[in-house]
Image 1 (spheres, rainbow, N blue to C red):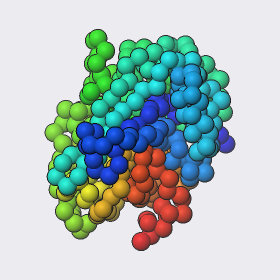
Image 2 (tube, rainbow, N blue to C red):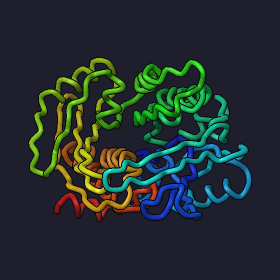
Image 3 (tube, rainbow, N blue to C red):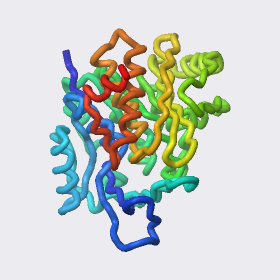
Image 4 (cartoon, rainbow, N blue to C red):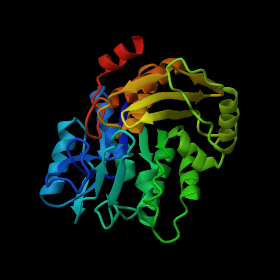
Length: 340
């Protein structure tokens, strides 16, 4: 049985300040690599899965350093391209107390943004793979990046892979002429067998008013009936997708979040516990940890949807404890948190 997982997206260089400083404070910047689909791949590799990451990197020392980092975390990079001119970057200013975090992108003309359909031999890349994962971010930068993402999903569909898709709507990225993010994301979702998004992304995609998640304590009781109706509508619109994972969090303040999720699977809705997360380290990549938990759970215990959901939530909760974009929680740590 094939178990290899392939992820596709842009690897970025993240710049931030130490502590909770603003960019105007001090002279030193911290740099580390990250990016949604790479985050998913590294989380899965940490859990022991065989993962190949596909992207396009720039020539020179920065691209070489990025490539070395991917291999350091155990990702296969056999089909990675190194022929661009620059690395996409983003600048992250962390939240503090009542001040929200902020992200500023600098991705124009990056190696990945200059993708063209046909650059990757997807039939060769996806040979002997079981799961293919990408997200809305990979398609957002340019029309050709969108067409390249469609191309990859068409081949994955043709080859019978399970296709995983994260909505990952970033409104500041869809700026190319004629970009229609809702229509483009809907087109991509037509290929998806499993899908992840937070409640705000579900609202954007469907234009269905979001259902508020107002938990202030872990004993908050959710009314699941409105969600069941919402998921039934989603399934009617996207009948191929058989698992929908919706993440929800209530941000009490910058370092205090309450987190939970719902999983709709083959007509049944599953709920799970609520984690009360205080004194968190870094919230970046929590959604990617959700997605990796879902993919790993489906392969590790495919007949237990409740356990898959519990595992996904525990994995994403542990991401709050790691600085940077990557969730480095082990399977043992996730299983331990699930049982606590």
